[in-house]
Length: 387
Ligand code: NAD
Image 1: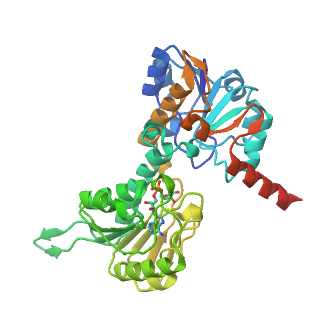
Image 2 (image 1 turned 135 degrees about the vertical axis):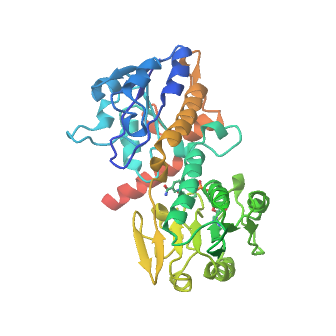
Image 3 (image 1 turned 60 degrees about the vertical axis):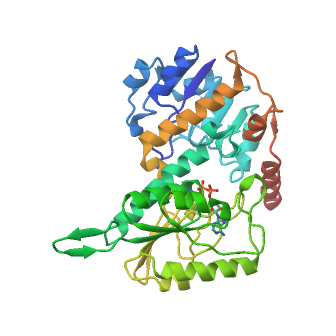
């Protein structure tokens, strides 16, 4: 069984799919690992380190992809600078595992199916306890939450911690985190470690204890309706509930120095929680870091990938934050990937059991078909637009 680690060609991507420590473990188990030359460079893992771990370093990407049984990547296959498409390197019957963005790019899923590639999308790993060690969305969201707190602290023209100095006493910054899922909880923990006073709001009341255990105050908005869908995820709430939560959020935002937003409902555009009026009521110099920027933003003023200033308030819409911490983000992603690979192998041969929830959920294409109904619907919608 030959596993290939391809180099990321997306310019803004610094992560790599496997790190040398993880490669060494796979090699020890009898798997052959090939790494594209320079794949780990931007995450500070050299070719020499991969070779020392037992991998073969290959310079020719087409050879690497064509000879592999399983290709591991961070991002979906792309077109290279020389015009060659990575997808064309994939051999029929091979396996590709990456963040494939299947709902955002259903045509690529169709192409993979036509090439008879078995593709697993890391976004589709179920968020269950059994799949926890393969849950790359969570591992990477944790990195993003940490980074978001650091970005807020660096952009705020004030200290985060309380300081008692000969030059006077500085009060701690007030941070408000909206959405206390994986990224939100890590943002809370990081802001607390930096000494800020932290409040958090989430539509799911069940997270109250987790928020409090991190030393933050949970802002409660009693709602009459059920806000939790199957699997424990948030669901979209009614207009009345939105208005009620917005009124409470507005009161807390007015008093905050930094706001970090991470609210999302799976499969939907990010909920709009911070309106332009709320931004206008914040103190000049305040900061909003909107982690949902790529999904449309939780703040009305957010522009993905940009910092914008509205009435003295800086609104930051960062993209791909895990890439800013490529060493640990890659290490965690590598662990997620290898746990999935091991889940799919029996005695070093691929054995797909579609009765298994993890395999069934994450496998987007197999044996010439797009297996996932939502992806098929997205594809039909794209094709209808073209006609
Ligand atoms: P998650 O599902 O674990 O958490 C989202 C939280 O939002 C949930 O706790 C949910 O209950 C809450 N929520 C939903 N609707 C809400 C509402 N109306 N009001 C308040 N809370 C609400 O998701 P996550 O993995 O923590 O990711 C959070 C966001 O960060 C997502 O938008 C994700 O795409 C984004 N993200 C961004 C980057 C980046 O680099 N910019 C990286 C990773 C994740």
